[in-house]
Amino acid sequence: MNRIPVAPGFFLNVEVAGSGPPLVLLHGFTGSAASWAPFIEALGGGFTTIAIDIVGHGHSDKPAPLDRYRMRQAASDLVRAAGRAGFPRAHWMGYSMGGRIALAVAAYHPGSVERLVLVGASPGLPTEEERAARRNSDEAIAQHIETDGIPAFVRYWERLPIFATQARLPSGITERIRSERLANHPVGLANSLRGMGTGSQEPLFDRLPGIVNPALLLAGVDDSKYVAIGQEMAAAMPAARFVSVPAAGHAAQTENPGFCAAEVIAFLTGAGPHGRTRQ
Image (tube, rainbow, N blue to C red; front, side):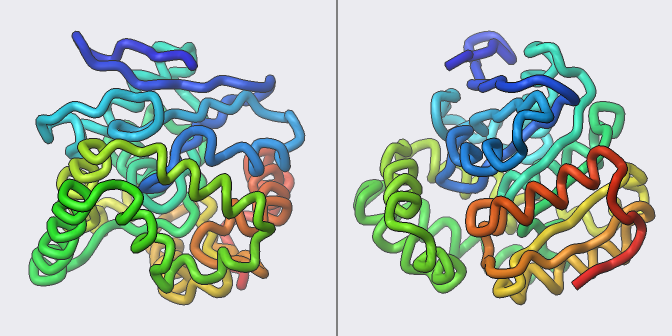
């Protein structure tokens, strides 16, 4: 555990491992830096991985005010944490919520990003009507977390259809995922939904054409919603390509880490194809 001061009285936990080109890793909602363990192993040690616990998660702080959970602030804090850990410019990779934040880092702090990898991510929601509906939904879930506690929430969360494909994973992996979810704090999760949920964040659709960093967008072939989003994003970004991941759903980097790692290694080392969409 390496808690780095990002602002007076505010710390983010940063886990650094390996050697080689730096790669910042941002986990999804209810996850932590530890969520990346199978993927880091699949990478084979060719990168310095900088896995950060996003605010409200893991060993990072979980403040009660919402300010540090706002998307722009969260992105700025993560850039500052990576810089103070010795990596002012790196490849950035994020999954789901972490993917949305990594995209925000590329949009707001392009000089900090070498190449960008997104897994099951989106640029937000396009209309205010959709964003309002999502904010209402997230607020109901946040209140559920605060009222009924983490165990009840985890039972609800892991039964969502988007995670159904994770039933194919070995029991040891599903138990590890459940343990990570159960280790969360109600304030951290509830405020993450309120501050950086898809309905609360500034949509980034208009910024996609300006993100010129080379980008690799991944989505599990069984995650049809995010396959479509990934393809649309790749078409809008000047230097992006999309790849669907076989035998995987939403958490493609966990459900098929070998395939994802091979694609990421090829992309980050310049050995793979670029500028084309592949399904």
